[in-house]
Length: 345
Ligand SMILES: [Mg+2]
Image (cartoon, rainbow, N blue to C red; front, side):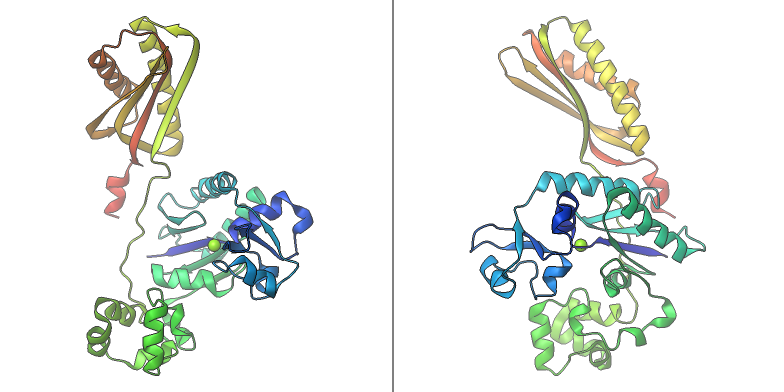
């Protein structure tokens, strides 16, 4: 098993820097504009002053009076994130998106040249999007995430089986995924501060005091983490719609439009390697009433003949007489094509 954890550095702030090159290398944060607001992301120059995410604005400003604070531009971040995720597809089709700026990639198919390939990924993201991404490689999720954090920002680190457990010993326990601030406090009170301290505790003791979580930590610091990369489809739905100035009345005209749309969906599905288990239509009448109808199938589909057959059924059942000003259809409940085979790899 080879798993890559990738994490964009100071993501929102980095996207803003791309739009405002004049702010580059200056302390910059994104988030609440008012004094009682909260920062969402701080760039690295700001972090040097002790400014970090989730910090109230007034506190950040007292630490760094010159801090530039920009409002959030969610749409821009989502678009940029999508660009990154599209590029990641070139390195592995098996991607688990953890958040807007973070993912696990199953790269078990990398037999050799792991370092070159990881660096090529970083280079590609940088060249195509202008963003720095930190990359960690290891043989399970816990260690891959730890590795991507190891040399942040713009880092790459590979944790191998033979590095465990010694490599982890000097780390503070807060670096162990799953140890939150409350558990950290409890462990501190027991005199446990580093992974090496934690390593001395036996399994029963950890389980008695911290239950399932304790057992998890016990295993993780020994390099045991069986969580698989859970591939998710990149989008929940794939759809297309069209508005008409001249309202459409004839059934065959509506069907002709839907047929073209289903062909478009097939093309997109093929490009993205996905299929959908639910087919939906959306119609808007001349007087702006919206009708949506869907059908979930036993087997996911992507070929236009299949989606179109469902659309036609839905249209016929709806038996709408009013003239239409909008016709659309979409595929929902998306999943990767070929996921069935891949699950058993
Ligand atoms: Mg990040």
